[in-house]
Image (tube, rainbow, N blue to C red; front, top):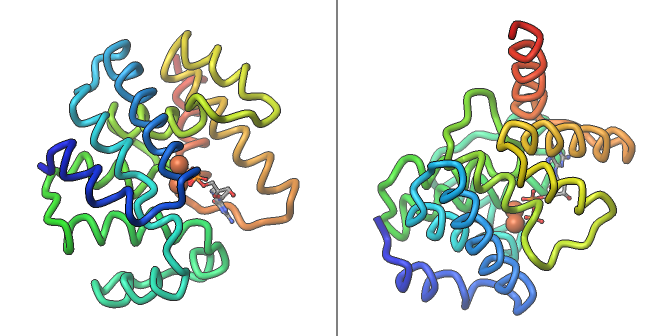
Length: 191
Ligand code: DGI
Ligand code: FE
Ligand code: FE
């Protein structure tokens, strides 16, 4: 597993100032959530620092990384360039930086779409990305409140927010996001 120092040295030069501050804030928020909900705070710190490592990289280069490591995009993924940084980020971390921890790699890989059956760490990073200190979108206070109440409540809010936002903008919704949402709703009904 990469150390905090190694992560900082790898990520900072790849990001704009604003995106680097976002990453530091997500990391800090993830540690807080990890401590509250029983995830590993050290992994949360690292995954938070790493999660957007490819966000400011040229999309063409992101595609190249995906191709280089044999990752084939579905039609939906091809139509949604905002998803590429999570996929190429995880591939870059595994193949170029030698990160071996599967939970950290999955937390980066699924931080944008979420997926069905997420680990505690994956949920922590997904939510920390919504509630980090500099976020100021409409509804952020509701998300912060949910994150303070329960991880599951915050996942629900995040998934609903994302699906509403994307469908409102007539953008494709990734099947992993819909799977996560449907699974959540079904399990809730069964309780
Ligand atoms: O990288 P961040 O900006 O910190 O946050 P993020 O990785 O959650 O990315 C959010 C962006 O990704 C936002 O513009 C919406 C977009 N996005 C998230 N899920 C989907 C999506 N875009 C499409 N088309 N489909 C998705 O399922
Ligand atoms: Fe991201
Ligand atoms: Fe982010």
